[in-house]
Length: 204
Image 1: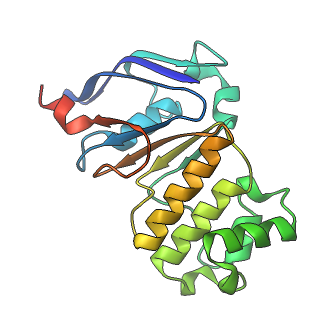
Image 2: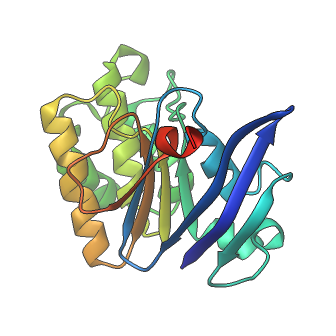
């Protein structure tokens, strides 16, 4: 599905990371782990074509030139640090009017809300919800449409133990349907995944 060869990125004259190699097959998970400033978010932005200047190769299954293929990006779901929950919208509206929720029925949204534990406050304005509850809305958007690859920047942040277990269960469930996940974090999770430690690479 995705193969990265000798990826290297610079910021000004500083090397953020180099010699980054990995591949992700259908149903696989990859974790990129590192401290603040180690380049975790930069990797995701490179894959999405948001940073045009880099060395190395990014090969998608649909194209040998990921930076020019829109088809690659429409098969991906991206969730950054800012999870995109609109504070003036209700939890229901945030699900319904998200990119993945446009064609979802009320019954489908109700099922997703129950799955992620927000069925009790679908009609509450998101500004009144906790950080963890907002994160559960974001998790719900993963389930409204199946994507080939999910790129998630620190998805375990602001979640309690139950929320962490929820993500682990949902990713395992979606892996079984063929979806793959590339996630970043400050420490490794309990997911079945290949793990890359950016801090160790940058110390070379």
